[in-house]
Length: 140
Image: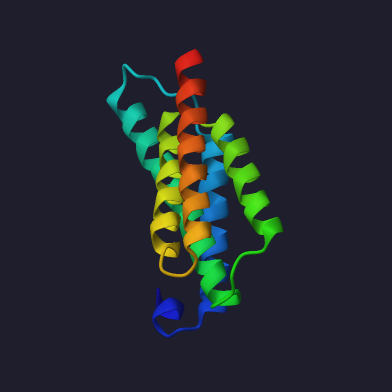
């Protein structure tokens, strides 16, 4: 927060990347299966996956503000965003997947003042991610 508050966003981004990477690493490789009979296990999964999911939003937002302020996304970035969120959604449970959908909705709302077409596309990605997460968890 110190670097963010002092508007040293490029340095702040280093810490955001480290934090988000650590959260995602833990969720992907260290967190055991959720035992729904154990409240501690359920809470650990909710907290860990929510922190990792919000970290995804944090890294996207902070990196864009630090390095790409006032720039519109390229077609390549738009395609990569859609594919990345679809791919990760296909591997996510309802907790982390729900956070990804939240991330896309937040990005869509935030971008509506800059580029309406990009905002609508992010909203479409959110709906697609929600469908993927829902289908994956329903069929599981």
